[in-house]
Length: 419
Image (cartoon, rainbow, N blue to C red; front, side, top):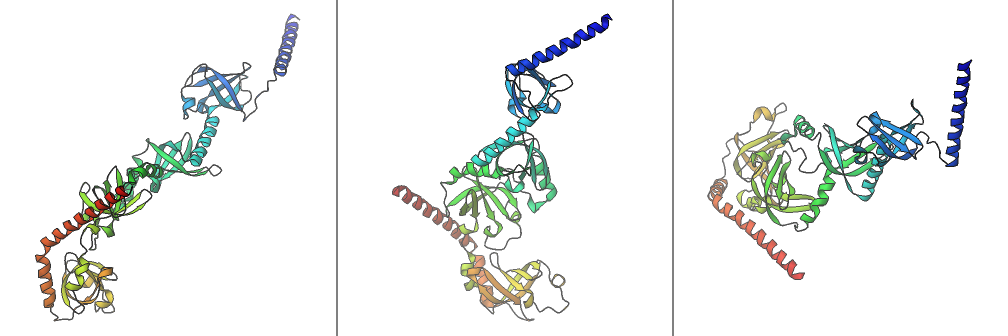
């Protein structure tokens, strides 16, 4: 009987306490937070495993496990007394506490910062977490985005000779764990699509250094990378430009590696500045050998040439060190079943007849000379003259470089005078 009275008394006390709590909430106009709401509180205790928060002196909240979220700086080093926001994920857990999350708030703040970075064109730092052949998986907070290979700064762009995909991927994977400063160039929160650019940040920093350079200026630099499409050159204040393979020399080149090595010093001319992209030319500081091609070779002349390369459409033929011609397949007297690769070999010397010449377009057409045809005397004397003029050609190249520099110096002086 005594026990029954005690149980009734406890129930009465619980109801009274509950009523008192409800009255307290009503009196202070305090609302119980609902799932999804953001609440502000003061840290009571903080450890690596859980954080407890006091909410308005009335409620206690707890953050634990993955919801701790230390990817954002303001959640990383919390201590007692700190005021912080958290999201409600359960209005009452097994201990009667609010179950809270820093992760949801952190992600919301991260999205806000990403939108601001896109709108204001400001930079952010992302962590590289993985790589594939297309680029780098990059993380801002716990939000994943992508940094394509094409959007890497020149220093990090994987310039691999021959374009070996396995070596390119190896280079990209070496960035995992590093932080990159990037700009946001594409942002779609609904599709969870974010594209970053390191190149845009690099371009912005390079712009002031480029202001002192103009198209037509000669500069001296150092080769930093060689690819199958050209050579990268560093000059000035860490400015980098590209010499396309077609601008390396007046004659045809199969591979830039045949001419240069990384670390070589080189003199070039600026031929284009597009934003922060700089395009250079090495051959424009050299005398164009095609200017005298008409004096060396004439239509109908029989010349001796070395086959450089065999293509399905014909033979590339070296007439001298600087003039190369093309013997089109239609000019090689082939039979119906004949194959160029079976009839000719690279390095083979053959006699050809000049059928066309266009110095302005750097083109010279050839056809296979008839049996018994002899090399024209004018061609022989021309080649002898070429051999004797090797030294003078070198002098001419140096003179051209000096003349170019003199013109630029005068132009700069005139500009300063006008100012």
